Structure formats: C-alpha cells, structure tokens
Image (tube, rainbow, N blue to C red):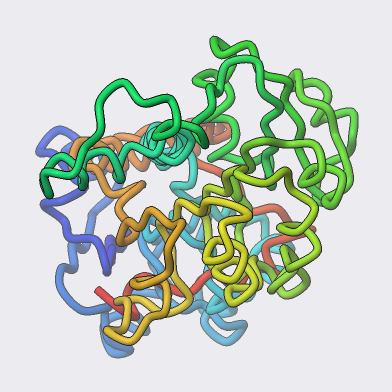
Length: 339
C-alpha cells in the first residue's frame, strides 16, 4: 500500500492523471486530501505501507509497526523534525524531499531582486507614478551599479545556489560561496571559491542568502557581516529569515549602507506591524520566490519517477535524499503553519 497524504499540498495541485496512474500501477494507493491524515487511518495502514508521500509523523513507535516501509517522500519542501530520521536510516528507508524543484524558480526571482536592487528599479517606477521622475540626470542613478564583472557571494551552496549559478555565469562575475556543510573541494568543483563567512561579505558586492535554517546558524549573519560590505552593496534574502540577525539587516538598510531585497520574514504571514514595511533601502516580496504554479505538477512526476526507480531496485534520482549528517539539525518552519 502507498499512502498519499500531501498536506499542505493538495492532490490536484501536484498530481496529474498520468502521475496518479503511475503510482497506482506500483501498488494500491490510499489518496488522502485536505488536513493531514488522522491517527486512525495512519495506524490502520502502517503494517501494509511500502511508501508514504507526505509529511506524516513517524516516531519510532510507528516505524516499528511499518515493517514494509521503504520510502518517505516529503512534498512539503522542508525536512521536518517529526520523523525519527536515524530510525529510518537504520531500517534502510529512503527519506526524500522536493528541494530540487524550487531551485529554478527561486533562482530566477533572486536574480530579479538583485537586479532590481542594484539598478534601483522600484524607485524609478514609483517616481514615474508620482510624476517626480528626472530624465538624463547622472545624479539620479549615482548609486546604481552593474552586476557584470562584480564579485558575488552565495551563503549556502545547495539546491537554490545550484539553480542560481548558471544564471550568474553570463555576467562574468567572480563567484564566492560559504557553506560549512560542504567540503571546500565540493564547492570548488562548482566553479566557486570557498571562503569564510565574513570574508564573503567583505568582498562581495551582492550577497545571496540561500541557506536553510539549522540549530547552529540561527542569526549567524549579523551586524559584522553587513558593516563590512562596501556601501551601497546588496543583500538578497530568499531562503529563511532566521539565518540573519533581522534587526541588524534592517538597520543596515535604513542607514543606507546596504540595500536589502527580502522574500522571507521572521513571522509569516507578515504582521501589519513588521518594521520592514517602513524601512527604506528595502525591496519586499511576500515569500513568492518558489511558488510558481507550473512547478507543482513536476512534484508529482518526481514522486512517480523515484517510486518507480525504488520499486525496480534502482536509486532515486529526482528528489533530494535526506542527509544523515544534517537533517536532524534543520529547523525551517513548516509552511502548513501559515497556509
């Protein structure tokens, strides 16, 4: 039996008729839509399950009853702390996530935010609408700069960075990265120079913050980082707000020292009182970078591809395997908390 329990996604959102048929060709499927499947359904199915598609809680007690379970395919986007990951790894259960599907859309949005900040595009738009624009005055564009040929820093070198790198290369940039979870050789293999965090901020004209939040990096990007940037540089935050010192980021933007392009916030939905709403030097987006309608059916295809591979004795290739060294430290908030 396969249990499909995709909350906060919906069945129609991620599964085409073709993807559903492919899953049903592998095993009988229990399709559950709406709120997460309740304990009565989950407990009844556990002994028969070979795969769970969703974020169903799997403490050790449930794993002990799921003797046939071979795969957990998380379609929420975060590896949540509601699974006994060591227990899964010890039992040979593959735990997979859809992180790779977000790489291209977030990368495109991140590049757009960087260009908007570097060229001060929102201000130009606002001035025209207000009738206050000035034509052909060099002073108006005095703070603008080209991305071409600049030094660009990436904090985090995972799915988002790997989606962004191909978009940056045509600009002829010097590329730096800081990722404490990767060996320097692995970063260098991507054609990127591995550097310490503070060095990255000192050298880069644009910094993309692409790292997930973990138990060890909360608030790690702080005042020292921003103060060491060249005046007028850009910080693009599109991963998780908790990795930055939020007041320090807004202080640096308000002072005019940096420009901050922000897609994620400490609290979502964004409270009416959120300081960023009135902070100058910011470009704001309400967590829109990854949510593009055309990506969602790709999730269903990824699930079908990897379940077919596993059923044939092959390794899953489309989704991201949970890393035993890091998965227990991830602390991104579940999106179901605010949808």
